[in-house]
Length: 200
Image 1 (cartoon, helix red, strand yellow):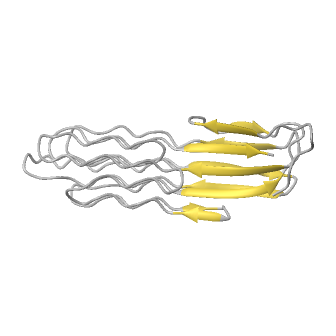
Image 2 (cartoon, one colour):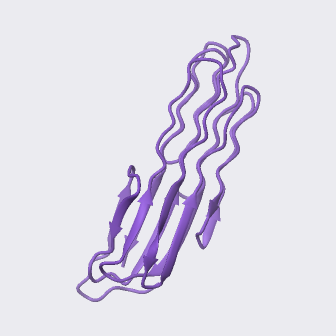
Image 3 (cartoon, rainbow, N blue to C red):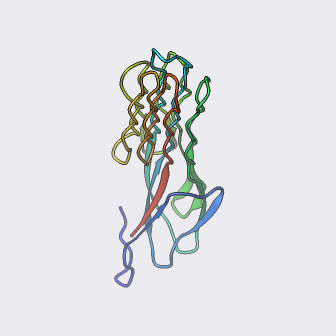
């Protein structure tokens, strides 16, 4: 990892929202570590007062360290949360967190995918990541009793607990936790993702 000049103070920028937003490298920085966590998916709702439903999958994680120069720009999107549902249906996929652009050290094209779709009987798959030097998948959600999948380490939050029958599913914890499924109430929300830029 390169270190900035004596006058540059290391800076971390953490984003919890943003769609196609512009990130500009601060003057004096010579290296950036980029960390992305995808959003979790929500839980399904089975419509049964005597069962569970599939819980949402956790978001993926990716990491990259690359040389940069002041004034370089990148574009980022933070995977938004996915609300729980209160009628019988499958859940929705979690939203990806992405970073793209060209800096002095080369191109950046990172994607930390959101958790997969949960159905009334099957938990959502963990999200998958591409474009990082490290790419880690999220954890799958439970297909019955259990919880939503955790977002991928080291940033990922826990999944929400699944709810039996009339019990609601728990919300996933940000960033990246999947929501718990519910038999006959409201399923848990899939948590938002995050994007982090660490400059030196």
